[in-house]
Length: 458
Ligand code: UD1
Ligand code: CA
Image (tube, helix red, strand yellow):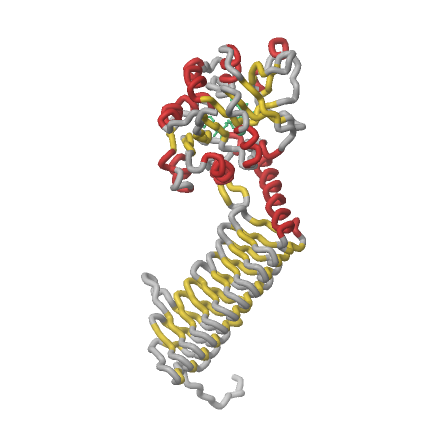
């Protein structure tokens, strides 16, 4: 077989009018990842980074969301249709040296590598191949027209379908994923016209044109594979998100993750959960979170970009983002761990404790009602209820250091920058503005006076 090279082309310039949102459709999220993320993920094993993307509407934000792809973005300033998007990108496709171009609508996030592989198998035999589906509701999908011998004749958009001209519908529709042979399809691009109900240039007209030219065309049938459904409306997006959610949760359960009440657990596609971890619903885990074997996440936790080491226990009702939870650590209930919170081995965080850019050393504890921001807490230290690191003077942030084995009495304000030495003790209710050396007691509060109580009333 002669050598082939495939460049993928993602069509992502449209506004997505039917979503009724100012945001570009491909940036709408499913499980907290933009729609386009999923399309790129499915393409990567097939074409690696050989991916061009046609952008237009909200292009700057699309570039911001995918900086690594943005140098291969092609701008379609005016969105005159999917065929026009292809015309605009064609020069870049040819320049990429590709023999084939795998075109995919950017609003198809459920697509799988397996489905794309099936289309790629047509590479050797066709000038143009595209995926077809036979969904229960053919909605606004482009209708596939075949002749009496079941050979492809054309794709006719739903709006433009004319029974007297095209015959009875078959239920087979276009999934919006095409494999084009660059050398033979290129010359047809200029033949596209916009004399249709939408006044747009349709990529789908290439099919009829190719058939007319005697090129080989095939429709690769994927049955009612819902993974190929495009997303056009909010309802379709939510339904697709549900499908993805179940797909991920089921895979994890099969791999050995115990997910209790799985219908209420949401796990994003980049989250890694090792077999042997245990998760209780309701729970949401997003971003690049990692849960090690033997970690246990209780109910009602909202987690983004956080890591959990073996043997840690996250109790119920916590909000955790960008935090590192170490081995044997206990968290919650009702805590908030913000980016840069690091809890070392066997540390404990209790209810109504907030941490931000702060390290809680091995075995250290902050059990109740505390704010630790821009702080380093040494091993074995005990942070009393109501301790606050006053890290911000309205302009800048400052660091608080608390030594190993220190004991901070309840209701202490630590005015940063400040440090409390190893094994130092702070009297309850203190406002600490000066460093406290190792092994010393710091106390800074108003002296108590007891006065006679006058019980006389006027
Ligand atoms: C398209 C197909 C239809 C198919 C369906 C499958 C056409 C004309 N119709 O319809 O046959 O059944 O997908 O889901 O292609 N886009 C651009 N530039 C444009 C217009 C669109 O980049 O000028 C992008 C959109 O951002 C979108 C994709 O192309 O990601 C498809 O466009 P959309 O308007 O959603 O096409 P459909 O009406 O769904
Ligand atoms: Ca669509």
